[in-house]
Image 1 (cartoon, one colour):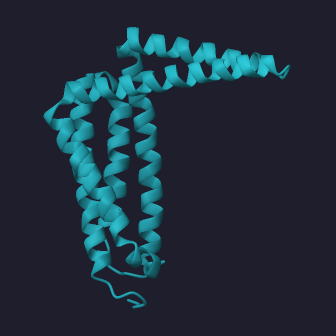
Image 2: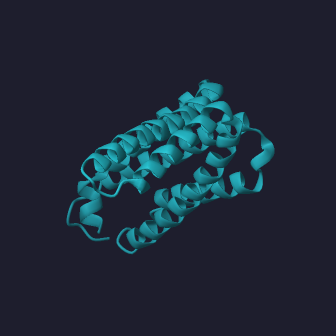
Length: 182
């Protein structure tokens, strides 16, 4: 495991730098960040719905099953409309999705960290990244009504911490000799 991670240290560095940049942008423009997240979700639903409708029409022309595609298309367009007209509700639902993602990611980061610790004693960066991810997710679950802009600030701080820890891990892995055992 250590050999593979050491050879791919740059992947952790890229993830870390991307998280730090996202964190900086979220803190600099919290309102735009929240709106952008909700808008992108709505745009995705709209595009997905339109293409599902196109597929339904083509399937009907080919005398193939099309009803489920029609339902998916209409539902996608409906969800896009709700997202655009009631973006606050979408932001609240998105908050829980982000919280679940953070907790699951944190648990998986801890699993990877503990596996790495068997090969590189004293390694703490990945553990810290996992713990901050879990703490972030739990905080979002416990305080959902604290305000959408405050959540974006929390996301920004989380991204900075998580990114910094991954960069620390990447630098530590880069310094390891491939094939060395600790």
